[in-house]
Structures are given as structure tokens and as C-alpha cells.
Image (cartoon, rainbow, N blue to C red; front, top):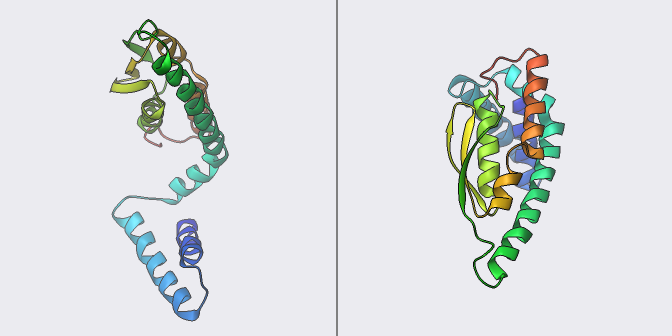
Amino acid sequence: MLMFLLFFALWLLFNGRLSWDVIGFGLVFSALISAFAVKICGWSTQGSRRVLRLAGRLLVYAGSLVVEIVKANLATLKVIVSPGARLVQPQIFHFDSGLNRGGLQTILANSITITPGTYTIGIQGRELTVHALNREFAEGTPGSGLNQQLMAMEDALAEAGEGRDAV
């Protein structure tokens, strides 16, 4: 039901006008998309509650990610415009993320990849393999604030009794 209401609200918001035909089509399309998500994609009411439970933490994470991206842009710019290549010391390193949930590991891996100067090469179990533009970037990745926030989300899900496959 929550998903249906979200789809319907988005329909009304993106449509830009309010009339009976817009409302009618919105109700039909929202019901069809909700049914598809439940029947085909396996979405459940627990999934909706999980998203709501983590919404605040995800917003804080997104804000932290933006800050990290800005900081990494500045650091990468420093490396690029510096005379000579003395600041460039590319490294490939491995670190244990401490995350057990595949979805949260994927979020961390993608966050590392979209941050300038770093790129996630692979994930094996809890271990991430990352390429960094220089040593400074490599030292800042393990145990970063983003990783800590995701670990806190994982702990919150565990306390709420969510299974390991959730997120």
C-alpha cells in the first residue's frame, strides 16, 4: 500500500496538473506498477518498512558521500595540477569492509568508485579490492566515515531482526 501511494504521489508530482483523467490514469498505473513490483520483483511490505526505517540514515549517507566527493575532487585536482608526477603513486589494495550484506557492500563499492581517485576493482566476500590514484587515497578508504555509516545501518537492520539478505 505504501508503495502504491508513493507511485501515485510521484505520478501527480511529475504530471504537473490535476484533473480527473490524470488521477484516473495515475491510480491505474500506480496499481499496475505496484502489482508488478510485488509479483515479479518480490517486493514486500517488509521492504517498504525497511526503506522507511533506513531513510534518515540513507539521507545522511548521501550527504556524507557528497562531502567526500568534493574533498576527493580537490585532492585529485591537486595531484593533476602539481608539477611533476611525484604525487602520483597508484596503488591496488585490499581491505575488509566489515559488511556482511551484499546490498550494503555494493553501495560502498559504488561510493568508492564514484569518488574521484579511487575505483573498486572487485568484491570477494567482505573484502574489497580498490585501485587508488595515490597513497593518500588508499590510506583514507578503509575505515572511512562512509564505511562506518553502512556498518551502523547493518547493525540497525540486525537489531530490527531483518535477515541477512535484506539490503
